[in-house]
Image (cartoon, rainbow, N blue to C red; front, side, top):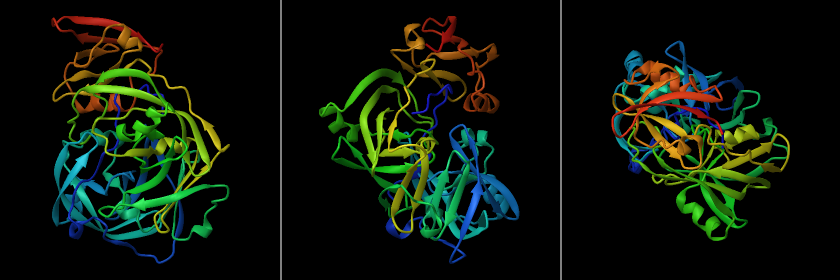
Length: 400
């Protein structure tokens, strides 16, 4: 798990929920029969940002294998794409959105051309947090389903190919990859506790290496191969609908998680109450090269160093997250065993200021300052909040 200084935690953006088979998003195609291209990307605050050419212009998109393709309303209007359907989509916090669907007539990803790819249309206001990455949309698995995608996070480059023989897959750990019927979300086989195999969604929109669901954690906890290391209360997920309810959050450490022949020791995860599946996120890319072979239904992991990987010691940092309310900011989750917890801060307290900057009213600028990690690069952070009595309280919160 990434040791976060960021006060905002943005996980899975959204994924398809309950569409009828005849209305699935697995449409469109790659124009070239054979292709192989190496494409650079930016890695910004846990997100892969790539360039797509649409309508003769380069546009920035987040590559999110746990979501369908999506565009903001302004791009849909600019390219003149007609609404073809309305989709019911579920986001990471369990909120349901009714979003229009279009087809992108043509776009290029590197030298590879895609045609007639379905995409949902995100409203400008509800998708405002995503705009902090300067993007026009998301490219998801319903477009990538006809490709082999290899991600080298260390080199900040990816490969899109139609031929696995052109990829270096030597010394890779390989497991089956299963695609869902609606939008080709990719699920690998992840092993917990030696012989307990679960499906885990490969979600490059999630910055963690692993996120094990509450249900999937039950057997490791029963076998005592997972242990509780911290408890918190509040909100931790910022999703499209921003609809997460306050809840008890539990941080677990797992003795061993296994992908093929590669073992991951003492990695941590925070199961969410709304979490339907376990996830493997882009944080896995810190330890090796990831290959999703959608064509041949295989997942490959090529470790940079070794077959047994020790997880980094998790730190809760300041011990709190800042959550955006409708017109202001509040304290989201607070970990009990943390600097913020020991100072008595609680979920729901209104934020007044951070490092002398007025945070009493929510603005797009402040959203992006928090999302991009401003105000959080110091060993101590100075914060003012409003307590239950309506009194503004000033605190200095350290990292230990």
